[in-house]
Image (cartoon, rainbow, N blue to C red; front, side):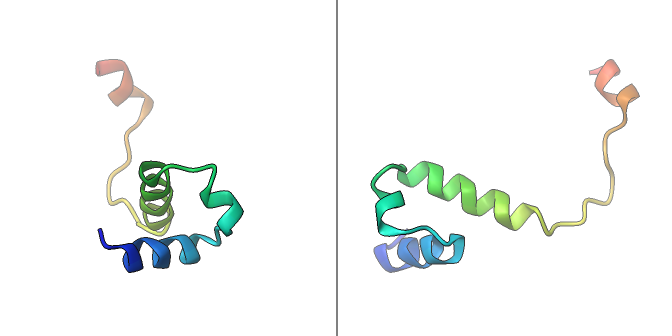
Length: 54
């Protein structure tokens, strides 16, 4: 990931420069991935029976 792309991701997450001092690059990447997953419509969701079988 390039520096401009990283800063774009931070801007998309609404992070301030002060917040960047407290967060790691990996945490910011995880936050962006989770943000993108929020809009994904999963075709199949696990049920309680699936968890029990696991």
